[in-house]
Image 1 (cartoon, rainbow, N blue to C red):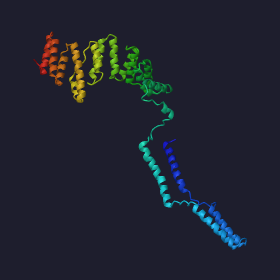
Image 2 (tube, rainbow, N blue to C red; image 1 turned 180 degrees about the vertical axis):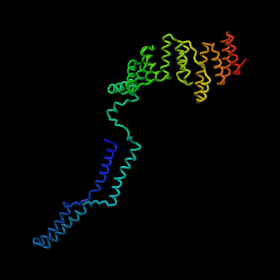
Image 3 (tube, one colour; image 1 turned 45 degrees about the vertical axis):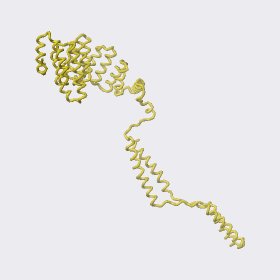
Image 4 (cartoon, helix red, strand yellow; image 1 turned 60 degrees about the vertical axis):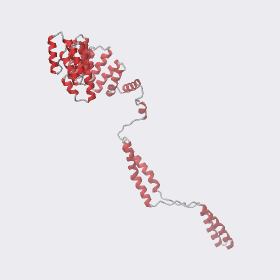
Length: 366
């Protein structure tokens, strides 16, 4: 039944309850009171006197006694209620017909929710409580999905939670159902490949690799799929391919990508060289807030310095590190990096020449 129709019926009932007493006419009480009995007795005395049944003196004495009783009865009888005037009736009727609905709307519209769906008491009792343990909430969602197995949104919500709980086999099933009932996407394929890898103890299996490849076929920029395909290459002994995949990720990544440290460490692990701090990265950093820019630059400079300590043959890397220190106003660290760079490449005349030329261009010669 339409909600507004129900409200209309309720309003009509309320108005009728107010108008019903106003529409009733006052009926004075007809007979049955003590005063009316005494009046009948006075009339009867007159009839008896006229018929000669009693004498005049007796009739007068009876009238006096009955009159006294009539006065006493009239004094003790409550006054009849006054009838409301027609003007008052009209005013009350107008208030009931117009004022009550307007007052109801004025209260309901700001406080109520006319578009809110039904929420029966039984459903309220089963509604998830944010204070419940995560395991209890997961159990409630699973119970819901047992009764509604085609709820794609429910599977999409449940799958990552199962993965975080370490229930990888259940997470695999949940992601497959999410793809089936909520639609295929590169993100869901990458997430499915990730839990397949986790279920295999961190090994990128053939099944997981196939999911990552499907993900990249839908979106060539899917970060998770690219990273795990690089990990698969590393596990297969193809370190060069792994470094190439991860370097390609860094080349397309924004300067503040949160996964940059993970990929940079992976490149160092396979013996590759991560892209150095670029001029484009420094320019992009200038568009950020001062706090975010400083944090981003500091993290990248520290990672670059750590890499150069392990592999000091990268002349361009040393020059970028020195330039970064100069940009941040840390000339002492720039001078220290210059000394470390010369010591690292001092055995190679060509690299030393390139380094000194670059330092001269930076205004840090000598």
